[in-house]
Length: 255
Image 1: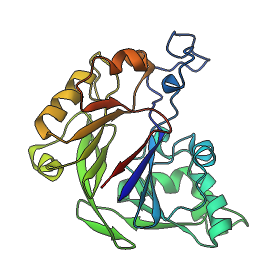
Image 2: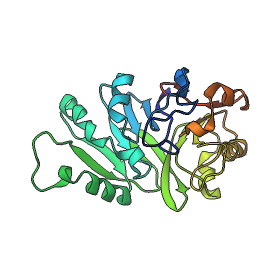
Image 3: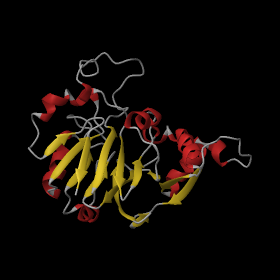
Image 4: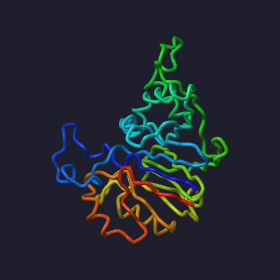
Protein backbone atom coordinates (compact mmCIF):
# COMPACT_ATOMS: atom_id res chain seq x y z
CA UNK A 1 0.00 0.00 0.00
CA UNK A 2 1.26 3.45 -0.97
CA UNK A 3 -0.17 6.70 0.37
CA UNK A 4 0.34 10.01 -1.39
CA UNK A 5 -0.36 13.38 0.23
CA UNK A 6 -0.47 16.51 -1.89
CA UNK A 7 1.58 18.97 0.16
CA UNK A 8 0.99 21.65 -2.44
CA UNK A 9 -0.70 21.79 -5.85
CA UNK A 10 0.02 25.35 -6.93
CA UNK A 11 2.66 27.36 -8.72
CA UNK A 12 4.34 30.73 -8.74
CA UNK A 13 3.27 31.16 -12.37
CA UNK A 14 0.88 34.04 -12.91
CA UNK A 15 0.95 35.24 -9.30
CA UNK A 16 2.00 38.89 -8.89
CA UNK A 17 4.46 39.91 -6.20
CA UNK A 18 1.76 41.80 -4.29
CA UNK A 19 -1.26 39.96 -2.90
CA UNK A 20 -3.49 38.81 -5.73
CA UNK A 21 -7.07 40.11 -5.78
CA UNK A 22 -8.42 37.82 -8.49
CA UNK A 23 -11.67 35.92 -7.74
CA UNK A 24 -9.86 32.57 -7.42
CA UNK A 25 -7.33 33.88 -4.92
CA UNK A 26 -10.16 35.48 -2.92
CA UNK A 27 -12.21 32.26 -2.99
CA UNK A 28 -13.47 30.92 0.35
CA UNK A 29 -13.13 27.34 -0.92
CA UNK A 30 -10.01 25.77 0.67
CA UNK A 31 -9.49 23.76 -2.54
CA UNK A 32 -8.62 27.03 -4.27
CA UNK A 33 -5.81 27.76 -1.78
CA UNK A 34 -2.67 26.23 -3.27
CA UNK A 35 0.88 26.20 -1.95
CA UNK A 36 3.80 25.39 -4.26
CA UNK A 37 3.74 21.88 -5.71
CA UNK A 38 5.17 19.01 -3.68
CA UNK A 39 4.05 15.56 -2.56
CA UNK A 40 4.72 13.25 0.36
CA UNK A 41 4.80 9.54 -0.50
CA UNK A 42 4.51 7.09 2.38
CA UNK A 43 5.61 3.66 1.20
CA UNK A 44 7.35 0.67 2.80
CA UNK A 45 7.31 2.41 6.18
CA UNK A 46 9.20 5.49 4.99
CA UNK A 47 8.39 9.06 3.95
CA UNK A 48 9.68 10.30 0.61
CA UNK A 49 9.20 13.95 -0.36
CA UNK A 50 9.34 15.19 -3.95
CA UNK A 51 10.64 18.79 -4.06
CA UNK A 52 10.99 21.30 -1.23
CA UNK A 53 9.71 24.65 -2.43
CA UNK A 54 9.37 27.91 -0.48
CA UNK A 55 6.40 26.51 1.46
CA UNK A 56 8.24 23.38 2.63
CA UNK A 57 8.36 24.23 6.36
CA UNK A 58 4.66 25.00 6.62
CA UNK A 59 3.77 21.99 4.48
CA UNK A 60 5.67 19.66 6.83
CA UNK A 61 4.01 21.22 9.89
CA UNK A 62 0.56 21.12 8.33
CA UNK A 63 0.93 17.47 7.37
CA UNK A 64 2.36 16.50 10.76
CA UNK A 65 5.47 14.95 9.22
CA UNK A 66 7.91 13.80 11.92
CA UNK A 67 10.59 12.21 9.75
CA UNK A 68 11.62 11.92 6.13
CA UNK A 69 13.84 9.30 4.54
CA UNK A 70 14.74 11.31 1.44
CA UNK A 71 13.93 14.26 -0.79
CA UNK A 72 13.80 13.67 -4.55
CA UNK A 73 14.23 16.70 -6.79
CA UNK A 74 12.53 17.06 -10.14
CA UNK A 75 14.61 20.10 -11.15
CA UNK A 76 16.33 23.18 -9.77
CA UNK A 77 13.76 25.98 -10.13
CA UNK A 78 13.30 27.93 -6.92
CA UNK A 79 9.62 27.07 -6.50
CA UNK A 80 10.82 23.46 -6.09
CA UNK A 81 14.01 23.92 -4.04
CA UNK A 82 13.91 27.13 -1.99
CA UNK A 83 12.76 25.54 1.28
CA UNK A 84 15.56 23.00 1.55
CA UNK A 85 17.23 24.80 4.47
CA UNK A 86 14.36 23.69 6.71
CA UNK A 87 15.46 20.05 6.68
CA UNK A 88 17.60 21.03 9.69
CA UNK A 89 14.61 20.22 11.95
CA UNK A 90 14.68 16.63 10.68
CA UNK A 91 18.46 16.54 11.17
CA UNK A 92 17.92 17.47 14.82
CA UNK A 93 15.11 14.99 15.47
CA UNK A 94 16.53 12.06 13.51
CA UNK A 95 20.23 12.72 14.30
CA UNK A 96 21.35 12.22 10.70
CA UNK A 97 21.67 13.89 7.33
CA UNK A 98 18.74 13.84 4.93
CA UNK A 99 19.35 11.93 1.69
CA UNK A 100 18.95 14.25 -1.31
CA UNK A 101 18.43 12.56 -4.68
CA UNK A 102 19.17 14.88 -7.61
CA UNK A 103 20.96 14.82 -10.93
CA UNK A 104 24.37 16.50 -11.16
CA UNK A 105 23.04 19.71 -12.70
CA UNK A 106 20.54 20.13 -9.89
CA UNK A 107 23.18 19.33 -7.27
CA UNK A 108 25.38 22.12 -8.62
CA UNK A 109 22.45 24.53 -8.35
CA UNK A 110 21.85 23.46 -4.73
CA UNK A 111 25.52 23.96 -3.92
CA UNK A 112 25.31 27.52 -5.21
CA UNK A 113 22.01 28.34 -3.51
CA UNK A 114 23.00 26.78 -0.19
CA UNK A 115 26.76 27.37 -0.36
CA UNK A 116 27.08 27.59 3.43
CA UNK A 117 26.06 23.93 3.67
CA UNK A 118 28.99 22.88 1.50
CA UNK A 119 31.62 25.38 2.69
CA UNK A 120 34.86 24.13 4.24
CA UNK A 121 33.89 25.73 7.54
CA UNK A 122 30.70 24.10 8.80
CA UNK A 123 28.82 26.62 10.93
CA UNK A 124 27.03 24.85 13.82
CA UNK A 125 23.41 24.02 13.07
CA UNK A 126 23.54 24.17 9.28
CA UNK A 127 21.39 21.66 7.38
CA UNK A 128 22.94 18.26 6.90
CA UNK A 129 22.48 16.77 3.44
CA UNK A 130 23.77 13.66 1.75
CA UNK A 131 23.76 14.26 -2.01
CA UNK A 132 23.06 11.15 -4.07
CA UNK A 133 23.35 11.06 -7.86
CA UNK A 134 20.18 10.58 -9.84
CA UNK A 135 20.09 9.50 -13.48
CA UNK A 136 17.57 7.93 -15.80
CA UNK A 137 18.00 4.46 -14.33
CA UNK A 138 15.90 2.67 -11.69
CA UNK A 139 17.19 2.95 -8.13
CA UNK A 140 16.20 1.96 -4.59
CA UNK A 141 15.70 3.87 -1.37
CA UNK A 142 15.72 1.48 1.59
CA UNK A 143 14.24 -1.25 -0.56
CA UNK A 144 11.68 0.91 -2.39
CA UNK A 145 12.13 0.72 -6.17
CA UNK A 146 11.86 4.02 -8.06
CA UNK A 147 11.83 4.57 -11.82
CA UNK A 148 12.82 8.06 -13.00
CA UNK A 149 10.83 9.49 -15.92
CA UNK A 150 12.66 12.03 -18.09
CA UNK A 151 10.44 14.84 -19.35
CA UNK A 152 11.03 18.33 -20.77
CA UNK A 153 10.14 21.70 -19.25
CA UNK A 154 10.59 23.67 -22.49
CA UNK A 155 14.35 23.00 -22.98
CA UNK A 156 15.11 22.02 -19.38
CA UNK A 157 15.32 18.28 -18.63
CA UNK A 158 13.19 17.41 -15.59
CA UNK A 159 12.59 14.15 -13.75
CA UNK A 160 9.30 12.62 -12.78
CA UNK A 161 9.13 9.43 -10.71
CA UNK A 162 7.23 6.16 -10.80
CA UNK A 163 6.84 4.11 -7.63
CA UNK A 164 4.83 0.95 -8.14
CA UNK A 165 1.62 1.84 -9.95
CA UNK A 166 1.88 5.57 -9.20
CA UNK A 167 3.74 8.18 -11.23
CA UNK A 168 4.31 11.86 -10.42
CA UNK A 169 5.24 14.36 -13.13
CA UNK A 170 5.37 18.12 -12.74
CA UNK A 171 6.70 21.06 -14.78
CA UNK A 172 6.52 19.28 -18.11
CA UNK A 173 5.30 20.15 -21.57
CA UNK A 174 6.81 17.18 -23.43
CA UNK A 175 7.18 13.44 -22.78
CA UNK A 176 8.93 11.31 -25.38
CA UNK A 177 7.48 8.07 -26.68
CA UNK A 178 10.30 6.16 -24.97
CA UNK A 179 9.51 7.69 -21.58
CA UNK A 180 5.77 7.16 -22.06
CA UNK A 181 6.48 3.43 -22.19
CA UNK A 182 7.51 3.71 -18.52
CA UNK A 183 4.07 5.14 -17.74
CA UNK A 184 1.98 2.27 -19.04
CA UNK A 185 -0.27 0.29 -16.71
CA UNK A 186 -0.57 2.94 -13.99
CA UNK A 187 -3.27 2.99 -11.38
CA UNK A 188 -2.59 6.67 -10.64
CA UNK A 189 -0.91 9.34 -12.77
CA UNK A 190 -0.22 12.77 -11.26
CA UNK A 191 0.46 15.30 -14.00
CA UNK A 192 0.91 19.06 -14.22
CA UNK A 193 -1.77 21.21 -15.86
CA UNK A 194 -1.02 24.89 -15.42
CA UNK A 195 -4.04 26.58 -17.00
CA UNK A 196 -6.41 26.38 -19.96
CA UNK A 197 -4.47 28.82 -22.14
CA UNK A 198 -1.31 27.83 -24.00
CA UNK A 199 1.98 28.09 -22.10
CA UNK A 200 5.53 27.77 -23.40
CA UNK A 201 6.79 25.28 -20.78
CA UNK A 202 3.82 23.64 -19.03
CA UNK A 203 1.03 21.35 -20.16
CA UNK A 204 -2.32 23.09 -20.49
CA UNK A 205 -5.49 21.41 -19.24
CA UNK A 206 -6.31 20.05 -22.70
CA UNK A 207 -2.74 18.84 -23.25
CA UNK A 208 -2.71 17.05 -19.89
CA UNK A 209 -6.06 15.41 -20.65
CA UNK A 210 -4.68 14.21 -23.99
CA UNK A 211 -1.76 12.56 -22.18
CA UNK A 212 -4.21 10.89 -19.79
CA UNK A 213 -6.27 9.55 -22.70
CA UNK A 214 -3.12 8.20 -24.33
CA UNK A 215 -1.62 6.53 -21.24
CA UNK A 216 -4.96 5.32 -19.83
CA UNK A 217 -4.22 5.24 -16.09
CA UNK A 218 -7.09 4.12 -13.89
CA UNK A 219 -7.12 7.59 -12.31
CA UNK A 220 -5.31 10.86 -12.94
CA UNK A 221 -4.77 13.87 -10.69
CA UNK A 222 -3.80 17.27 -12.06
CA UNK A 223 -1.37 19.46 -10.14
CA UNK A 224 0.91 22.53 -10.49
CA UNK A 225 -2.25 24.57 -11.02
CA UNK A 226 -2.25 28.32 -11.59
CA UNK A 227 -5.08 30.52 -10.34
CA UNK A 228 -5.60 31.16 -14.07
CA UNK A 229 -7.12 27.68 -14.28
CA UNK A 230 -10.27 28.95 -12.54
CA UNK A 231 -12.28 27.75 -9.56
CA UNK A 232 -11.63 24.17 -8.43
CA UNK A 233 -15.26 23.04 -8.35
CA UNK A 234 -16.08 24.55 -11.75
CA UNK A 235 -13.08 22.91 -13.42
CA UNK A 236 -13.69 19.58 -11.69
CA UNK A 237 -17.25 19.48 -13.03
CA UNK A 238 -15.86 19.59 -16.59
CA UNK A 239 -13.36 16.74 -16.18
CA UNK A 240 -13.76 13.07 -17.16
CA UNK A 241 -14.93 10.72 -14.42
CA UNK A 242 -11.43 9.34 -13.79
CA UNK A 243 -9.61 12.72 -13.73
CA UNK A 244 -9.43 14.93 -10.66
CA UNK A 245 -8.14 18.39 -9.96
CA UNK A 246 -5.84 17.82 -6.99
CA UNK A 247 -5.90 20.12 -3.98
CA UNK A 248 -3.65 20.74 -1.00
CA UNK A 249 -3.85 18.06 1.72
CA UNK A 250 -5.67 15.59 -0.55
CA UNK A 251 -4.64 12.05 0.36
CA UNK A 252 -4.92 9.06 -1.96
CA UNK A 253 -4.00 5.43 -1.53
CA UNK A 254 -2.66 3.10 -4.21
CA UNK A 255 -2.79 -0.66 -3.66
